[in-house]
Image (cartoon, rainbow, N blue to C red; front, side, top):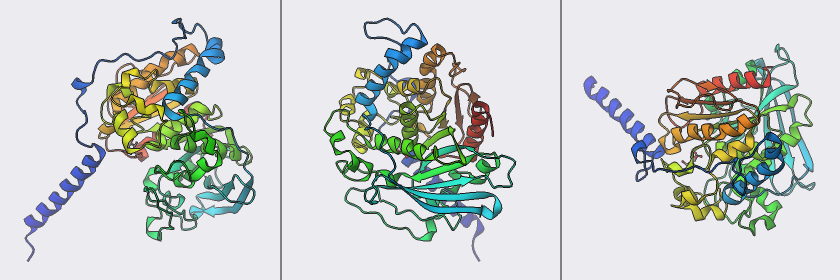
Length: 430
Ligand code: GCU
């Protein structure tokens, strides 16, 4: 006979251990998670012009100050980007009018930058509302990277499987077995997005640049090798962001997508990427950064959770060579992360945090939205309406939206509810 109380105790212990391991992974030891230990800091002002005067009007922002801020962010954080390359070949994998049991349409295309189809191949997965839907195209869309392959975003057995790269230098990609199909479905909420009259466009980030430091030999970096011989080198985040713009170039040719209403979305390192894509390409109508933390939405000077030194050490390929000089030296940076938001202004921007994601400094993510607000105001928009950090589960939707929800580092149905409402508000619904 099993002893039930023993069994219950074992299950409780396993749950506790799983929970702790999960949290331990999310919050490495030896970093500051104590608000009272955040050092005093002064943020640089994106509206301070060389010579000390403040930007007097919107025209001056567009003409002289914004280009300076963009250059600063390229030099000190994300790197310069090469010019656009036209897509040389589109391989069409067809349109399935009756996908998801009639709840959607699925299209897949592969984009190549070379006619002979050598070099990077970007596999684009597109879900559209069904023909029967009230919402008629062209559809506004969400465009974002997935971490583990297109086939992981939904259990749909017809999504072509991605070749997945391990995150290790010297490795090569492999086609995973079918067990990973649909594994990240909760992060994508495909049916909900389609029901609300939006399309979803996603690509696997490893197709574009495998996520390890290899001296920028593989992925899209191979297209512009000269861009590495400079202090503001073309980084991995830069490569991922650049390619989001190339996918948008392609969407401009797709009659079923309204390319003027594309929201660029990303989680974590890919939320850092969505911010940079939004900052560098004004065609993105709306920008969403989910749990992006250090080098994303969070203010570096707070040194809460992940630090500049730690991120530069673990992920040297994400930021510029010059960024390394701010290891343990954040106050010397002429910028901070609210500058990337200033570059997105006056377009709608949503920043989301999670309560158990201390590594990403939720409060620092909110404070950056407040610090970017004067630029929104100068450009005639309200920016972030709140000045106090909103309570957990109480979203604020201004021109900048923000929420902190319960739970861990993730993308959830709650997050998507907010993004859909926010997109309805700013992009005029369907
Ligand atoms: C690590 C990294 C973060 C990043 C995250 C992710 O935790 O330190 O900066 O956001 O990975 O992308 O999942």
